[in-house]
Image: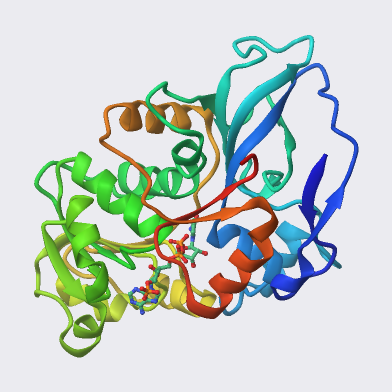
Length: 326
Ligand SMILES: NC(=O)c1ccc[n+]([C@@H]2O[C@H](COP(=O)([O-])OP(=O)(O)OC[C@H]3O[C@@H](n4cnc5c(N)ncnc54)[C@H](OP(=O)(O)O)[C@@H]3O)[C@@H](O)[C@H]2O)c1
């Protein structure tokens, strides 16, 4: 089979096409013929080890001390079941599935293995492989922060900073689904897209820097951009409001926890994890078009290096899908 691998951390050039034997599933494993995968901020992080300030050691601990532990990136993907191990229940050859291996990766290959107990679920019939491939990374992060940590309620005022990213665009949709009134903070060129995804109010990121946001207005402020401190956000929160940091460097996180809190306001940092149940929730929401990943770009399998180069050079908006099988 063909795959894209890397053996050292660095720029996009560390990624190279290679060939290997098609893997054989163990008793509890499912072999998936990959149709589509994505280029996520997680893939970029594991490739470059360009970690937020203070987290370099954590990057090496998670991704590999001397070099990458997992040579094949691809933190989410979709495809067809090609074979199943003898103990596998609930998945049959030919089933359309999507998977979220997260930091175990594996989607940058024509075939990938998943444990039947891992984050894997069936694709609703109305969804394409491309759409299914891009459901999990942003979707599971949005579920973790908004349903889990934030416990968003109907009519909550929720601001999403960095709303045009893979995670931000998923958060806008999920917050909207949960009944919140969503303010999306992003560059003006993305306003139309974010309104389409469910944002009621739109604020230019440059304007946020200049003027801040409405005082005492938000139940939840979720930041995916890594640019907001607790001190900055505190006046914009209602009594009892929460600042949720999806992306924060160590200094930001520590400062937030050490800053004295008033009026029941809190700040939290969190980490998304991979659960089949979350994938089933996302599949259900996608089947009713309540949640649908914003696919901003598509690449062919042999263009993955270019996709990573584009990401390094100009950043990413929404989700970038790689069609492994044309
Ligand atoms: N805690 C967790 O479990 C978890 C899970 C997933 C991701 N993350 C982290 O969350 C962050 C976002 O991930 P992602 O996948 O959404 O990345 P992404 O797709 O690359 O999106 C990043 C977004 O941030 C926006 N942005 C950058 N600087 C900004 C600023 N100063 N103000 C407003 N917006 C800004 C960018 O918009 P423009 O380029 O248009 O400005 C872009 O839309 C990454 O740092 C990632 O490592 C954390």
